[in-house]
Every structure is written in structure tokens, then in C-alpha cells.
Length: 433
Ligand code: ADP
Ligand code: ZN
Image (cartoon, rainbow, N blue to C red; front, top):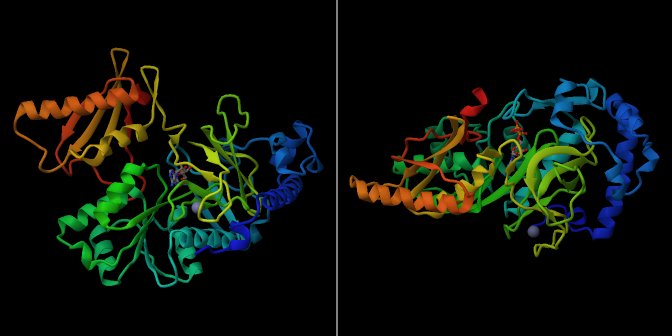
């Protein structure tokens, strides 16, 4: 079902007109209410009336995470605190957290965005959704929570952790949907199997997964293990939270809620806007946000966008999966490596569990990449020759994909630490050298 057909299926010209109108209003608002933006615009010699259509967006300044940190905690808010009804903070994956504030209207738009996502996944008011994203300052838990309620489905506010109880309640309460990180979904699947819970005793049919990069191979793994349909939901607290984009039942890229968030792809080096189809850094302008409106916020997430129509009928621009964050990119002996490339190789091979850890170090001035990966039960062997053959097989495939060699360490199932939230898959020891 399409939740908000007039908005989600607008004709491209109609959407573009709406975006232009909203953009002009936004720029006018931040110019008058946010000293930070007024200063930036004055420095660049731009007045709000210079911005009339979405094509004018390239004249506007960028905003970075550092700008939010420099104005910690409330410096970029565009309304008085009396209008702010909720605070969240980014999870701080890459440093000091950034603080975001929402007006009542912001929260209602956010819930609507998530209701759009859930409908696109095929959820409806008969669903019972266990929200296992963390509740609290992190936007995952409360974001999904109010979205599920807005859809009219039933929410089980589990929050993260306490895996045994998660499983028991999903079972006893007849949960049909689970929302959590993809890495936690795998952990849950494993724990269910270990506890001897037969899958057909669960009513689960759908997973709502995001908050960290994951691959299509990971999707297949989760879908098979849990017997569900797994969908991608993307977002970031600075822009709103989960639901900035979502897949539809076709699973062919994620629809961006672009009547509220205008997307651009830029080259992180030249900062020039790139055409549809090219990979670069995703940038968002919040067209309707009141509490913390942002002009051209640089997400650091790398992907591409397309305006090719989707068969589902939604006409918004779609984004590819996130390849990684520019901060996640490892430069090993001068070669760019994304953890997602390694994940793809591991998950294509049936000999391995989808659990891995990358350790990067520098020994004698040379970068070393160690890939620890769990060998699946039944493939582990006491015979040295078999283990060596397996190691060579994966080493060879990784070399083909990455263009550099890695030290492979095969480990037993369950030996790599599982995550309840965002997985930490890289330990870069060079930072401390
Ligand atoms: P932090 O930057 O501290 O992790 P957030 O909790 O707001 O703050 O996380 C937002 C980030 O999480 C995004 O910028 C992106 O890197 C990642 N993310 C969120 N959803 C997805 C997704 N579906 N696929 C890939 N990455 C995602
Ligand atoms: Zn679609």
C-alpha cells in the first residue's frame, strides 16, 4: 500500500516545484533565525531571494558535522527552546555526539515518514512490531516506535539487549515484524536456533533493518535464517532519524522522502554536484524541518541516486545502498578498502558464518590487514590441509576484489563478539601509533 499517494507519487515537475517553493521558504527562515547561516550566506553574498528553484541549491553553503559540534548543543536550532519538544543525539560512532531538536510538527512528519516506509514494506495495522533498536537518545528506537503507532500497527517497545527476553516476547506476543540493526538480526537468528526455537512457532514475516551498512548478501542470509522479508531503512539523526529513505517491496534501491529532504550527490574532493548514477557523498537539505533545519548537510555516506521511475508507482529519487561512510574507508597500503567489500566476499561463501572482524595495523611501516572470519559448523576441520585450502580460497577471492592481500584468520563459530546495536567490525590500531 502507498501511505501518502499524493506526495509519494507526485509528477516530477510537480515535485520539483514543491521542492523549490519549500527551499525558498527554508532559506528565508534560516537567514532570519540562525545567525550561523546568515553569516555564511552574507560571506557568500547570497540573499534568500536568490534561491527560487532547486537548481539554485548549488549556490548555498554546505553544513558539516563539525559545524554542529562547533555550535554544541543548540546553536543551530532555528526556533526558541519553548518550541522544541524532544532532543536526540547521534550515536557518536565517529566522535563527540551531535545534538538535534524537534518541534511537534517535526515529530509528526517523522512519524509519517516511517508510516510511509512501513507501508512500502507491506506492513499494516494488523502487524505487531518488536522495536529492538535502542530507545533513548539514539533515534532508532523512539523513531520507529511512533512510526509504528502512526501506521496503526502494534508496537512492542523492547529496546536493545536482553536477547533471551526479546525472543520470548516475539514468540509469546506474536510479533510479525522486527526492527533492529542487521547485525543484531543475525545474532537473534543465531540465538533462536541455539535455544532450539523452531522458526514456524514464530509469526515473524518482516524485518526493518538499518542504522549501519549492510549488503544484499547479508540480506539473503537474514531472510533465510529468520524466514522473513528483510527491508532497508536509512536515516541519520542530524537530518531526522530513520525513515529518510526506505525500500519498497521491489527492493531495488531506497525511496528518498524527497518532498521533505532534498538529496544531492557531490564529489567529496571538488564538492561539485554529480549527475544521477555517479557515486559520491550524499548531501541533504531539510526542506520542511523547523527545529534544526540544515542546508546541504554532508552525510559522509557514499552512494549514488537515480530518478528512474520505480515499478511500485512512487516517483521519488532512489538511493543505492550505502557503500560505507567516507570515515569508514580504510586506506591500506594506499588502496581504498571498504568493509562492505569484504562482507560481500565472505557472505558469498557457504563455508563461512556472516561474522567477521577486520584488524588493521602497521608493522615495520607496512599496513597489515587481518580478516578474522568464523568457519561454519561442518566446515571446520582438524586436517591442516583442509584448513589451509579454505584459507587460500578466501584469501584469493579477497585479493581479487580488494587488490591487496590480507592475512586470514579462521576462527570457530561464535568466537567473534556479537553486537546488539551498530556492529563494530573494524579495529584500526594505526590510529594509536
Ligand atoms: P552516528 O553518525 O553517530 O552513527 P546516527 O545514529 O544518526 O549517528 O547514524 C546515522 C548513520 O548511520 C548514517 O549516516 C549512516 O552512516 C548509517 N546508516 C543508517 N542507516 C543505514 C542504512 N540503512 N544503511 C547504511 N548505513 C546506514
Ligand atoms: Zn519502489
